[in-house]
Amino acid sequence: MRPDFLRPVRPVIAGIASVFAAAIAQAESAHGIAMYGDPALPPDFVSLPYANPEAPKGGRVVFGNTGGYNSLNPFVQKGTSPWQLRFWTHESLMGRSWDEPFTLYGLLAESVETAPDRSWVEFTLREDARFSDGNPVTIDDVIWSYETLGTEGHLRYRGLWGKIESIDQTGPRSVRITFNEPDRELALITGLRPILQKAQWEGKDFANAALHDIPVGSGPYVIDDYEAGRYVTLRRNPDYWGAGVPFRRGTMNLDEMRIEFYGDGTVLFEAFKAGELTAIREFNADKWDNQYNFPAVQRGDVIKTEIPHGKPSGMTGFVMNTRKAPFDDWRVREAMLLAFNFEYINDTITGGAQSRITSYFSGSDLGMQPGPATGRVSELLQPYAEDLPHGALDGYALPVGDGSARNRANIRKANQLLTEAGWTVQDGVLRNQNGEDFTITVLLQQGDTEGQTAIEIYTRALERLGIQVTVDQVDSAQFTGRNAELDFDMTFFRRALSLSPGNEQRLYWGSENSDTPGTRNLMGVASPAVDGLIDAMLASESHEDFVAATRALDRVLTSGRYVIPIWNFDVGRIAHAKELMRPQTLPIYGDGPEFMPQVWWYEN
Image (cartoon, rainbow, N blue to C red; front, side, top):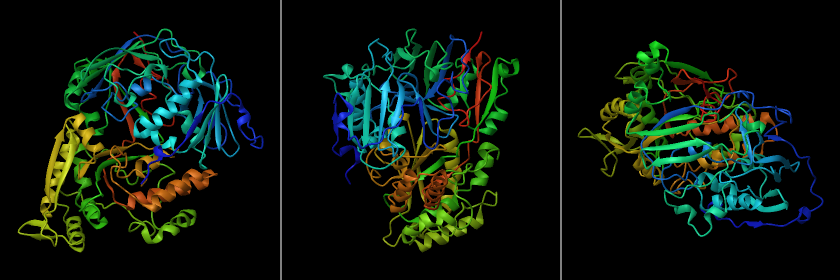
Protein backbone atom coordinates (compact mmCIF):
# COMPACT_ATOMS: atom_id res chain seq x y z
CA MET A 1 0.00 0.00 0.00
CA ARG A 2 1.40 3.37 -1.02
CA PRO A 3 2.02 5.51 2.09
CA ASP A 4 0.80 9.10 2.31
CA PHE A 5 4.22 10.64 2.29
CA LEU A 6 5.01 9.24 -1.19
CA ARG A 7 2.17 11.05 -2.91
CA PRO A 8 3.36 13.82 -5.22
CA VAL A 9 3.09 17.35 -3.91
CA ARG A 10 4.22 20.64 -5.35
CA PRO A 11 5.72 23.24 -3.03
CA VAL A 12 5.72 26.57 -4.81
CA ILE A 13 7.14 29.89 -3.76
CA ALA A 14 4.93 32.27 -5.67
CA GLY A 15 5.04 35.90 -4.76
CA ILE A 16 1.41 36.87 -4.69
CA ALA A 17 -1.94 35.42 -3.70
CA SER A 18 -3.09 35.84 -7.30
CA VAL A 19 -2.19 32.19 -7.90
CA PHE A 20 -5.43 31.37 -6.13
CA ALA A 21 -8.80 31.56 -7.80
CA ALA A 22 -10.69 34.73 -6.93
CA ALA A 23 -13.78 32.67 -6.36
CA ILE A 24 -12.36 31.25 -3.13
CA ALA A 25 -14.09 32.99 -0.27
CA GLN A 26 -11.83 34.85 2.15
CA ALA A 27 -11.89 34.76 5.92
CA GLU A 28 -10.53 37.40 8.27
CA SER A 29 -7.15 36.81 9.87
CA ALA A 30 -7.44 35.80 13.49
CA HIS A 31 -5.22 35.37 16.55
CA GLY A 32 -6.33 31.77 17.01
CA ILE A 33 -8.29 28.88 15.57
CA ALA A 34 -10.55 26.24 17.15
CA MET A 35 -11.70 22.89 15.83
CA TYR A 36 -15.31 23.93 16.41
CA GLY A 37 -16.56 27.42 17.16
CA ASP A 38 -14.30 30.28 18.21
CA PRO A 39 -11.24 30.37 20.49
CA ALA A 40 -12.11 31.02 24.12
CA LEU A 41 -9.45 33.70 24.61
CA PRO A 42 -9.89 37.18 23.06
CA PRO A 43 -7.35 38.72 20.67
CA ASP A 44 -5.89 40.83 23.49
CA PHE A 45 -5.41 37.97 25.96
CA VAL A 46 -2.43 38.43 28.27
CA SER A 47 -1.45 34.81 28.87
CA LEU A 48 -2.84 31.31 28.88
CA PRO A 49 -5.33 30.91 31.75
CA TYR A 50 -3.20 28.31 33.54
CA ALA A 51 0.03 30.35 33.32
CA ASN A 52 1.16 33.03 35.76
CA PRO A 53 2.31 36.02 33.67
CA GLU A 54 4.13 37.36 36.74
CA ALA A 55 6.08 34.16 37.37
CA PRO A 56 9.75 34.90 38.17
CA LYS A 57 12.53 33.62 35.93
CA GLY A 58 15.47 31.67 37.32
CA GLY A 59 16.44 28.47 39.06
CA ARG A 60 18.04 25.19 38.11
CA VAL A 61 16.17 21.88 38.06
CA VAL A 62 17.12 18.28 37.34
CA PHE A 63 14.77 15.66 35.93
CA GLY A 64 15.35 11.96 35.34
CA ASN A 65 14.76 9.68 32.36
CA THR A 66 15.21 5.92 32.24
CA GLY A 67 17.36 4.31 29.57
CA GLY A 68 19.62 6.41 27.38
CA TYR A 69 19.79 8.24 24.07
CA ASN A 70 21.89 8.18 20.93
CA SER A 71 20.38 11.18 19.10
CA LEU A 72 19.57 14.80 19.84
CA ASN A 73 17.28 15.09 16.82
CA PRO A 74 13.70 14.26 17.91
CA PHE A 75 12.32 14.87 14.42
CA VAL A 76 13.71 11.83 12.58
CA GLN A 77 12.95 8.13 12.70
CA LYS A 78 16.53 7.07 13.32
CA GLY A 79 17.82 6.81 16.88
CA THR A 80 16.42 7.53 20.34
CA SER A 81 16.37 11.10 21.61
CA PRO A 82 15.28 12.56 24.96
CA TRP A 83 11.52 12.95 24.59
CA GLN A 84 11.52 16.41 26.17
CA LEU A 85 13.52 18.11 23.42
CA ARG A 86 10.74 18.74 20.94
CA PHE A 87 8.75 20.52 23.68
CA TRP A 88 11.57 22.76 24.93
CA THR A 89 13.82 23.63 22.01
CA HIS A 90 11.56 24.05 18.97
CA GLU A 91 8.37 25.88 18.12
CA SER A 92 5.53 25.75 15.64
CA LEU A 93 3.49 28.44 13.92
CA MET A 94 0.72 28.06 16.49
CA GLY A 95 0.65 26.79 20.06
CA ARG A 96 -2.01 24.68 21.73
CA SER A 97 -4.02 25.74 24.77
CA TRP A 98 -4.47 22.78 27.11
CA ASP A 99 -7.52 24.40 28.68
CA GLU A 100 -9.64 23.88 25.55
CA PRO A 101 -10.38 20.65 23.64
CA PHE A 102 -8.51 21.80 20.52
CA THR A 103 -7.66 25.47 20.10
CA LEU A 104 -4.46 27.07 18.83
CA TYR A 105 -3.08 30.56 19.36
CA GLY A 106 -0.34 32.39 17.51
CA LEU A 107 3.27 31.57 18.33
CA LEU A 108 5.73 31.96 15.42
CA ALA A 109 2.71 33.16 13.44
CA GLU A 110 0.97 36.37 14.45
CA SER A 111 -2.26 35.42 12.66
CA VAL A 112 -4.08 32.60 10.91
CA GLU A 113 -6.70 32.65 8.15
CA THR A 114 -8.72 29.80 6.65
CA ALA A 115 -11.22 29.21 3.88
CA PRO A 116 -14.79 28.78 5.12
CA ASP A 117 -14.54 25.07 4.29
CA ARG A 118 -10.96 24.93 5.60
CA SER A 119 -9.66 23.75 2.27
CA TRP A 120 -6.65 25.99 2.90
CA VAL A 121 -4.98 27.77 5.77
CA GLU A 122 -2.72 30.82 5.68
CA PHE A 123 -0.25 31.92 8.34
CA THR A 124 1.55 35.22 8.74
CA LEU A 125 4.87 35.07 10.56
CA ARG A 126 5.76 37.50 13.33
CA GLU A 127 8.32 39.95 12.07
CA ASP A 128 10.57 39.41 15.08
CA ALA A 129 10.49 35.57 15.12
CA ARG A 130 14.07 34.32 15.42
CA PHE A 131 16.00 31.09 15.70
CA SER A 132 18.28 30.66 18.69
CA ASP A 133 21.31 31.73 16.59
CA GLY A 134 19.64 35.09 15.89
CA ASN A 135 18.63 34.44 12.29
CA PRO A 136 15.03 35.27 11.34
CA VAL A 137 12.44 32.55 10.79
CA THR A 138 11.44 32.86 7.14
CA ILE A 139 8.82 31.46 4.81
CA ASP A 140 11.64 29.48 3.17
CA ASP A 141 12.24 27.79 6.54
CA VAL A 142 8.53 27.03 6.90
CA ILE A 143 8.15 25.48 3.45
CA TRP A 144 11.39 23.51 3.78
CA SER A 145 10.34 22.20 7.20
CA TYR A 146 7.00 20.89 5.95
CA GLU A 147 8.57 19.18 2.95
CA THR A 148 11.56 17.73 4.83
CA LEU A 149 9.60 16.46 7.81
CA GLY A 150 6.96 15.11 5.45
CA THR A 151 9.44 13.08 3.42
CA GLU A 152 12.42 12.40 5.68
CA GLY A 153 11.12 13.04 9.19
CA HIS A 154 9.66 10.80 11.85
CA LEU A 155 6.56 8.89 10.82
CA ARG A 156 4.47 11.11 13.09
CA TYR A 157 5.07 13.98 10.64
CA ARG A 158 4.72 12.22 7.30
CA GLY A 159 0.98 11.72 7.05
CA LEU A 160 0.25 15.43 6.69
CA TRP A 161 2.50 15.82 3.64
CA GLY A 162 0.34 13.47 1.59
CA LYS A 163 -2.69 15.70 2.26
CA ILE A 164 -1.05 18.91 1.03
CA GLU A 165 -1.82 19.99 -2.52
CA SER A 166 0.48 23.00 -2.51
CA ILE A 167 2.43 25.41 -0.33
CA ASP A 168 2.59 28.97 -1.68
CA GLN A 169 4.27 32.09 -0.38
CA THR A 170 1.63 34.81 -0.51
CA GLY A 171 3.60 37.72 0.89
CA PRO A 172 6.93 38.59 2.58
CA ARG A 173 5.86 36.83 5.79
CA SER A 174 2.82 34.76 4.79
CA VAL A 175 2.31 31.26 3.48
CA ARG A 176 -0.81 29.46 2.28
CA ILE A 177 -1.18 25.69 2.49
CA THR A 178 -3.88 24.10 0.34
CA PHE A 179 -5.17 20.60 1.08
CA ASN A 180 -6.17 17.86 -1.36
CA GLU A 181 -8.97 16.36 0.74
CA PRO A 182 -11.75 17.64 3.03
CA ASP A 183 -10.61 17.50 6.64
CA ARG A 184 -11.35 20.30 9.12
CA GLU A 185 -8.50 19.32 11.41
CA LEU A 186 -5.74 19.76 8.83
CA ALA A 187 -5.67 23.52 9.33
CA LEU A 188 -4.88 22.97 13.00
CA ILE A 189 -2.42 20.12 12.51
CA THR A 190 -0.52 22.26 10.03
CA GLY A 191 -0.10 24.94 12.67
CA LEU A 192 1.58 22.48 15.04
CA ARG A 193 4.44 21.28 12.83
CA PRO A 194 7.88 22.22 14.21
CA ILE A 195 9.79 24.76 12.15
CA LEU A 196 13.46 24.00 11.52
CA GLN A 197 16.24 26.11 10.00
CA LYS A 198 16.77 25.34 6.31
CA ALA A 199 20.29 26.79 6.11
CA GLN A 200 21.60 24.48 8.83
CA TRP A 201 20.93 21.39 6.75
CA GLU A 202 22.19 22.45 3.34
CA GLY A 203 24.57 19.73 2.14
CA LYS A 204 23.76 17.50 5.16
CA ASP A 205 21.77 14.29 5.51
CA PHE A 206 18.89 15.34 7.77
CA ALA A 207 17.48 11.84 8.32
CA ASN A 208 20.86 10.34 9.25
CA ALA A 209 22.51 13.22 11.06
CA ALA A 210 25.22 12.56 13.63
CA LEU A 211 24.70 13.09 17.36
CA HIS A 212 26.49 16.45 17.28
CA ASP A 213 24.22 17.79 14.50
CA ILE A 214 21.71 19.32 16.89
CA PRO A 215 18.75 20.95 15.08
CA VAL A 216 18.61 24.71 15.56
CA GLY A 217 15.24 25.77 16.94
CA SER A 218 13.39 28.93 17.84
CA GLY A 219 12.30 27.73 21.29
CA PRO A 220 13.15 29.18 24.70
CA TYR A 221 15.85 26.58 25.42
CA VAL A 222 19.06 25.49 23.73
CA ILE A 223 21.23 22.47 24.48
CA ASP A 224 24.21 23.72 26.48
CA ASP A 225 26.02 20.48 27.29
CA TYR A 226 25.57 16.73 26.94
CA GLU A 227 27.23 13.36 27.35
CA ALA A 228 25.69 10.66 25.18
CA GLY A 229 23.40 8.41 27.18
CA ARG A 230 24.17 10.10 30.51
CA TYR A 231 22.83 13.65 30.63
CA VAL A 232 21.62 16.64 28.63
CA THR A 233 21.69 20.20 29.98
CA LEU A 234 19.47 22.90 28.51
CA ARG A 235 19.66 26.60 29.32
CA ARG A 236 17.07 29.29 28.76
CA ASN A 237 18.13 31.53 25.89
CA PRO A 238 18.55 35.06 27.35
CA ASP A 239 17.86 36.46 23.88
CA TYR A 240 14.75 34.35 23.29
CA TRP A 241 12.66 36.24 20.76
CA GLY A 242 9.19 35.28 22.04
CA ALA A 243 9.25 36.29 25.71
CA GLY A 244 6.55 38.91 25.14
CA VAL A 245 4.24 36.79 22.98
CA PRO A 246 0.97 36.26 24.94
CA PHE A 247 1.13 32.49 24.40
CA ARG A 248 4.55 32.44 26.08
CA ARG A 249 4.00 34.80 29.02
CA GLY A 250 4.48 33.03 32.30
CA THR A 251 5.91 29.90 30.67
CA MET A 252 9.41 28.44 30.30
CA ASN A 253 10.52 30.15 33.50
CA LEU A 254 13.48 27.99 34.57
CA ASP A 255 17.02 29.11 33.72
CA GLU A 256 18.51 25.63 33.48
CA MET A 257 16.96 22.19 33.03
CA ARG A 258 19.12 19.08 33.16
CA ILE A 259 18.02 15.54 32.26
CA GLU A 260 19.91 12.71 33.97
CA PHE A 261 19.58 9.16 32.64
CA TYR A 262 19.20 6.08 34.84
CA GLY A 263 19.16 2.36 34.14
CA ASP A 264 15.67 1.81 35.55
CA GLY A 265 12.85 3.39 37.52
CA THR A 266 14.04 2.01 40.86
CA VAL A 267 17.44 3.69 40.58
CA LEU A 268 15.75 6.91 39.43
CA PHE A 269 13.44 6.90 42.45
CA GLU A 270 16.37 6.40 44.81
CA ALA A 271 18.14 9.33 43.15
CA PHE A 272 15.07 11.48 43.78
CA LYS A 273 14.93 10.42 47.43
CA ALA A 274 18.60 11.35 47.76
CA GLY A 275 17.89 14.86 46.46
CA GLU A 276 19.62 14.42 43.10
CA LEU A 277 16.40 15.20 41.16
CA THR A 278 14.04 18.14 41.51
CA ALA A 279 10.78 16.44 40.54
CA ILE A 280 9.38 13.06 39.61
CA ARG A 281 6.06 11.84 38.25
CA GLU A 282 4.53 8.82 39.98
CA PHE A 283 2.00 6.62 38.18
CA ASN A 284 1.36 4.03 40.90
CA ALA A 285 -1.22 5.09 43.50
CA ASP A 286 -0.13 2.47 46.04
CA LYS A 287 3.51 3.53 45.81
CA TRP A 288 2.42 7.17 46.07
CA ASP A 289 0.58 6.45 49.28
CA ASN A 290 3.15 4.15 50.89
CA GLN A 291 6.64 4.92 49.58
CA TYR A 292 6.62 8.71 49.51
CA ASN A 293 7.13 9.13 53.25
CA PHE A 294 10.93 9.41 53.23
CA PRO A 295 12.70 12.06 55.36
CA ALA A 296 12.62 14.87 52.77
CA VAL A 297 8.83 14.55 52.57
CA GLN A 298 8.51 14.49 56.34
CA ARG A 299 10.65 17.63 56.63
CA GLY A 300 8.58 19.42 53.99
CA ASP A 301 11.50 19.71 51.58
CA VAL A 302 9.61 17.56 49.07
CA ILE A 303 5.96 18.31 48.29
CA LYS A 304 3.41 15.82 46.96
CA THR A 305 1.08 17.48 44.45
CA GLU A 306 -1.94 15.88 42.77
CA ILE A 307 -3.26 17.32 39.50
CA PRO A 308 -6.78 16.26 38.38
CA HIS A 309 -7.75 16.21 34.72
CA GLY A 310 -10.73 15.74 32.41
CA LYS A 311 -9.09 13.91 29.51
CA PRO A 312 -9.88 10.37 28.27
CA SER A 313 -8.13 7.39 29.79
CA GLY A 314 -6.24 6.56 26.62
CA MET A 315 -5.00 3.01 26.37
CA THR A 316 -2.31 1.45 28.55
CA GLY A 317 -1.61 -2.26 28.74
CA PHE A 318 -0.15 -5.13 26.78
CA VAL A 319 -0.71 -5.04 23.03
CA MET A 320 -0.93 -8.19 20.91
CA ASN A 321 0.64 -8.35 17.46
CA THR A 322 -2.25 -9.41 15.22
CA ARG A 323 -0.16 -9.63 12.06
CA LYS A 324 0.59 -13.27 12.75
CA ALA A 325 -0.81 -16.31 14.52
CA PRO A 326 -2.01 -16.88 17.14
CA PHE A 327 -3.18 -13.30 17.73
CA ASP A 328 -4.80 -12.96 14.31
CA ASP A 329 -7.83 -14.77 15.80
CA TRP A 330 -10.17 -12.67 17.98
CA ARG A 331 -11.10 -15.75 20.04
CA VAL A 332 -7.48 -16.17 21.05
CA ARG A 333 -7.25 -12.49 21.99
CA GLU A 334 -10.43 -12.80 24.07
CA ALA A 335 -8.94 -15.84 25.79
CA MET A 336 -5.83 -13.81 26.61
CA LEU A 337 -8.04 -11.10 28.11
CA LEU A 338 -9.92 -13.66 30.18
CA ALA A 339 -6.68 -15.15 31.49
CA PHE A 340 -5.37 -11.75 32.57
CA ASN A 341 -6.58 -11.60 36.15
CA PHE A 342 -6.81 -7.83 36.36
CA GLU A 343 -8.54 -7.60 39.74
CA TYR A 344 -5.86 -9.72 41.43
CA ILE A 345 -2.95 -8.12 39.55
CA ASN A 346 -4.23 -4.61 40.27
CA ASP A 347 -4.59 -5.39 43.95
CA THR A 348 -1.05 -6.77 44.03
CA ILE A 349 0.60 -3.84 42.24
CA THR A 350 -1.48 -0.75 43.06
CA GLY A 351 -3.35 -1.96 46.12
CA GLY A 352 -6.54 -1.81 44.07
CA ALA A 353 -6.38 2.00 44.25
CA GLN A 354 -6.57 2.57 40.49
CA SER A 355 -9.58 1.72 38.38
CA ARG A 356 -9.28 -0.20 35.12
CA ILE A 357 -9.29 1.38 31.70
CA THR A 358 -12.49 0.10 30.07
CA SER A 359 -12.05 1.54 26.57
CA TYR A 360 -9.76 3.87 24.65
CA PHE A 361 -11.81 6.98 25.47
CA SER A 362 -13.21 5.86 28.81
CA GLY A 363 -13.68 8.51 31.46
CA SER A 364 -14.86 11.09 28.94
CA ASP A 365 -17.92 11.94 26.88
CA LEU A 366 -16.16 10.43 23.87
CA GLY A 367 -16.11 6.93 25.36
CA MET A 368 -18.39 4.16 24.11
CA GLN A 369 -21.61 3.69 26.05
CA PRO A 370 -22.58 0.34 27.63
CA GLY A 371 -24.96 -2.03 25.88
CA PRO A 372 -25.95 -2.17 22.21
CA ALA A 373 -25.08 0.66 19.87
CA THR A 374 -27.96 3.09 19.38
CA GLY A 375 -28.84 6.22 17.43
CA ARG A 376 -26.17 7.88 15.35
CA VAL A 377 -23.47 5.49 16.66
CA SER A 378 -25.43 2.53 15.30
CA GLU A 379 -25.96 4.30 11.97
CA LEU A 380 -22.22 4.86 11.59
CA LEU A 381 -21.47 1.21 12.36
CA GLN A 382 -24.10 -0.37 10.11
CA PRO A 383 -22.20 -0.06 6.78
CA TYR A 384 -19.47 -2.27 8.29
CA ALA A 385 -21.77 -4.69 10.13
CA GLU A 386 -20.45 -7.85 8.41
CA ASP A 387 -16.83 -7.06 9.26
CA LEU A 388 -17.19 -5.64 12.77
CA PRO A 389 -15.53 -7.36 15.73
CA HIS A 390 -17.74 -9.63 17.81
CA GLY A 391 -19.78 -7.44 20.17
CA ALA A 392 -19.22 -4.09 18.48
CA LEU A 393 -22.90 -3.66 17.67
CA ASP A 394 -24.50 -5.74 20.41
CA GLY A 395 -22.26 -4.51 23.21
CA TYR A 396 -18.92 -5.55 24.67
CA ALA A 397 -17.28 -5.21 28.07
CA LEU A 398 -13.94 -6.42 29.36
CA PRO A 399 -13.94 -9.71 31.33
CA VAL A 400 -14.16 -9.32 35.11
CA GLY A 401 -12.48 -11.80 37.42
CA ASP A 402 -13.58 -12.88 40.87
CA GLY A 403 -10.56 -11.32 42.57
CA SER A 404 -9.03 -14.65 43.59
CA ALA A 405 -5.57 -15.80 42.54
CA ARG A 406 -6.96 -18.75 40.56
CA ASN A 407 -9.63 -16.91 38.52
CA ARG A 408 -11.15 -20.30 37.68
CA ALA A 409 -14.31 -19.22 35.86
CA ASN A 410 -12.45 -17.01 33.39
CA ILE A 411 -9.76 -19.63 32.83
CA ARG A 412 -12.48 -22.13 31.88
CA LYS A 413 -13.98 -19.63 29.43
CA ALA A 414 -10.52 -18.96 27.98
CA ASN A 415 -9.90 -22.67 27.52
CA GLN A 416 -13.22 -23.07 25.69
CA LEU A 417 -12.43 -20.22 23.29
CA LEU A 418 -8.98 -21.62 22.59
CA THR A 419 -10.53 -24.99 21.78
CA GLU A 420 -12.97 -23.30 19.36
CA ALA A 421 -9.97 -21.60 17.74
CA GLY A 422 -8.30 -24.99 17.18
CA TRP A 423 -5.93 -25.10 20.16
CA THR A 424 -5.95 -28.11 22.49
CA VAL A 425 -3.71 -29.24 25.34
CA GLN A 426 -1.48 -32.16 24.38
CA ASP A 427 0.92 -33.53 27.03
CA GLY A 428 0.45 -30.35 29.04
CA VAL A 429 1.26 -28.06 26.08
CA LEU A 430 -1.28 -26.09 24.04
CA ARG A 431 -0.96 -27.01 20.35
CA ASN A 432 -2.89 -26.46 17.16
CA GLN A 433 -3.95 -29.12 14.66
CA ASN A 434 -0.53 -28.88 12.98
CA GLY A 435 1.19 -29.77 16.23
CA GLU A 436 2.62 -26.28 16.67
CA ASP A 437 3.08 -25.10 20.27
CA PHE A 438 1.36 -21.96 21.52
CA THR A 439 4.45 -19.96 22.48
CA ILE A 440 4.69 -16.19 22.84
CA THR A 441 7.42 -13.68 23.62
CA VAL A 442 6.58 -10.66 25.78
CA LEU A 443 8.83 -7.66 25.18
CA LEU A 444 9.46 -5.38 28.16
CA GLN A 445 11.83 -2.52 28.85
CA GLN A 446 14.45 -2.95 31.55
CA GLY A 447 13.40 -1.20 34.71
CA ASP A 448 9.68 -1.72 34.10
CA THR A 449 9.15 -3.41 37.44
CA GLU A 450 5.36 -3.08 37.36
CA GLY A 451 5.17 -4.61 33.90
CA GLN A 452 7.47 -7.42 34.99
CA THR A 453 5.33 -8.16 38.08
CA ALA A 454 2.12 -8.14 36.04
CA ILE A 455 3.56 -10.52 33.44
CA GLU A 456 4.93 -12.86 36.11
CA ILE A 457 1.43 -13.26 37.57
CA TYR A 458 -0.07 -13.49 34.10
CA THR A 459 2.43 -16.15 33.02
CA ARG A 460 1.26 -18.49 35.76
CA ALA A 461 -2.30 -18.27 34.44
CA LEU A 462 -1.17 -18.82 30.86
CA GLU A 463 0.84 -21.86 31.87
CA ARG A 464 -2.33 -23.38 33.28
CA LEU A 465 -3.75 -23.08 29.77
CA GLY A 466 -0.66 -24.77 28.30
CA ILE A 467 0.75 -21.54 26.85
CA GLN A 468 4.52 -21.14 26.98
CA VAL A 469 5.78 -17.61 27.69
CA THR A 470 9.23 -16.06 27.25
CA VAL A 471 9.89 -12.58 28.63
CA ASP A 472 12.54 -10.44 26.90
CA GLN A 473 13.65 -7.50 29.03
CA VAL A 474 15.84 -5.20 26.97
CA ASP A 475 17.32 -1.71 27.30
CA SER A 476 15.45 1.33 26.03
CA ALA A 477 17.25 1.45 22.66
CA GLN A 478 16.53 -2.23 21.96
CA PHE A 479 12.95 -1.83 23.16
CA THR A 480 12.39 1.10 20.80
CA GLY A 481 14.10 -0.71 17.96
CA ARG A 482 12.18 -3.94 18.32
CA ASN A 483 8.88 -2.08 18.56
CA ALA A 484 9.81 -0.19 15.40
CA GLU A 485 10.61 -3.47 13.62
CA LEU A 486 7.39 -5.05 14.98
CA ASP A 487 9.54 -7.78 16.54
CA PHE A 488 7.29 -8.93 19.38
CA ASP A 489 4.26 -11.08 20.13
CA MET A 490 3.14 -8.91 23.03
CA THR A 491 4.63 -5.72 24.42
CA PHE A 492 3.85 -2.88 26.79
CA PHE A 493 1.74 -0.21 25.14
CA ARG A 494 0.67 3.35 25.93
CA ARG A 495 -1.35 5.77 23.81
CA ALA A 496 -2.43 8.98 25.48
CA LEU A 497 -5.60 10.37 23.88
CA SER A 498 -7.13 13.82 23.97
CA LEU A 499 -10.56 15.41 23.99
CA SER A 500 -10.02 16.26 20.33
CA PRO A 501 -8.91 13.08 18.56
CA GLY A 502 -8.10 13.62 14.91
CA ASN A 503 -5.59 12.65 12.25
CA GLU A 504 -3.27 11.04 14.79
CA GLN A 505 -5.88 8.28 15.00
CA ARG A 506 -4.80 7.19 11.51
CA LEU A 507 -1.25 7.01 12.79
CA TYR A 508 -2.33 4.92 15.79
CA TRP A 509 -4.86 2.55 14.18
CA GLY A 510 -5.10 3.26 10.44
CA SER A 511 -4.51 0.44 7.97
CA GLU A 512 -2.39 2.42 5.53
CA ASN A 513 0.82 2.09 7.55
CA SER A 514 -0.14 -0.89 9.69
CA ASP A 515 2.77 -3.02 8.42
CA THR A 516 5.31 -0.23 7.97
CA PRO A 517 8.38 -0.45 10.24
CA GLY A 518 8.16 2.33 12.79
CA THR A 519 4.36 2.48 12.70
CA ARG A 520 2.52 3.57 15.82
CA ASN A 521 -0.14 0.96 14.96
CA LEU A 522 1.63 -1.69 17.02
CA MET A 523 -1.31 -4.09 17.10
CA GLY A 524 -1.48 -4.14 13.30
CA VAL A 525 -5.20 -3.41 13.03
CA ALA A 526 -6.24 -3.10 9.38
CA SER A 527 -9.98 -2.53 9.47
CA PRO A 528 -12.25 -0.79 6.93
CA ALA A 529 -14.51 0.11 9.85
CA VAL A 530 -11.69 1.79 11.78
CA ASP A 531 -10.54 3.70 8.68
CA GLY A 532 -14.10 4.74 7.81
CA LEU A 533 -14.93 5.89 11.32
CA ILE A 534 -11.76 7.96 11.50
CA ASP A 535 -12.82 9.57 8.21
CA ALA A 536 -16.29 10.23 9.65
CA MET A 537 -14.79 11.77 12.76
CA LEU A 538 -12.57 14.07 10.71
CA ALA A 539 -15.41 15.09 8.39
CA SER A 540 -17.80 15.95 11.23
CA GLU A 541 -19.18 19.47 11.04
CA SER A 542 -20.93 19.40 14.39
CA HIS A 543 -19.79 18.45 17.85
CA GLU A 544 -22.64 15.91 18.14
CA ASP A 545 -21.56 14.07 15.00
CA PHE A 546 -17.97 14.16 16.15
CA VAL A 547 -18.87 12.56 19.51
CA ALA A 548 -20.93 9.85 17.80
CA ALA A 549 -18.11 8.98 15.38
CA THR A 550 -15.57 8.81 18.21
CA ARG A 551 -17.85 6.61 20.32
CA ALA A 552 -18.30 4.30 17.33
CA LEU A 553 -14.54 4.13 16.79
CA ASP A 554 -14.05 3.39 20.48
CA ARG A 555 -16.47 0.46 20.18
CA VAL A 556 -14.63 -1.08 17.26
CA LEU A 557 -11.21 -0.70 18.84
CA THR A 558 -12.28 -2.04 22.23
CA SER A 559 -14.24 -4.99 20.86
CA GLY A 560 -11.31 -5.74 18.57
CA ARG A 561 -9.52 -6.99 21.69
CA TYR A 562 -6.12 -5.74 20.57
CA VAL A 563 -4.83 -4.63 23.98
CA ILE A 564 -5.12 -6.04 27.48
CA PRO A 565 -5.89 -2.82 29.40
CA ILE A 566 -4.47 -2.19 32.86
CA TRP A 567 -5.12 0.62 35.32
CA ASN A 568 -6.13 4.17 34.62
CA PHE A 569 -3.99 7.20 35.45
CA ASP A 570 -6.94 9.25 36.65
CA VAL A 571 -4.88 11.93 38.41
CA GLY A 572 -1.41 13.32 37.88
CA ARG A 573 1.00 12.81 40.79
CA ILE A 574 4.11 14.96 41.01
CA ALA A 575 6.59 14.92 43.90
CA HIS A 576 8.87 17.94 43.76
CA ALA A 577 11.24 20.16 45.68
CA LYS A 578 9.41 22.76 47.75
CA GLU A 579 11.05 25.52 45.71
CA LEU A 580 9.24 24.41 42.54
CA MET A 581 5.94 26.28 42.35
CA ARG A 582 2.89 26.11 40.06
CA PRO A 583 -0.13 28.30 39.22
CA GLN A 584 -3.35 27.60 41.11
CA THR A 585 -5.43 27.52 37.92
CA LEU A 586 -5.24 24.10 36.26
CA PRO A 587 -5.90 23.24 32.59
CA ILE A 588 -8.62 20.73 31.76
CA TYR A 589 -5.94 18.38 30.45
CA GLY A 590 -4.20 18.39 33.82
CA ASP A 591 -0.55 17.42 34.01
CA GLY A 592 1.63 16.75 30.97
CA PRO A 593 4.80 17.99 29.28
CA GLU A 594 3.09 21.30 28.53
CA PHE A 595 2.19 21.82 32.21
CA MET A 596 5.22 20.71 34.22
CA PRO A 597 7.75 22.24 33.87
CA GLN A 598 6.45 24.70 31.25
CA VAL A 599 4.31 26.84 33.56
CA TRP A 600 6.10 26.10 36.84
CA TRP A 601 8.76 28.37 38.38
CA TYR A 602 11.48 28.26 41.01
CA GLU A 603 11.41 30.26 44.25
CA ASN A 604 14.26 30.26 46.76
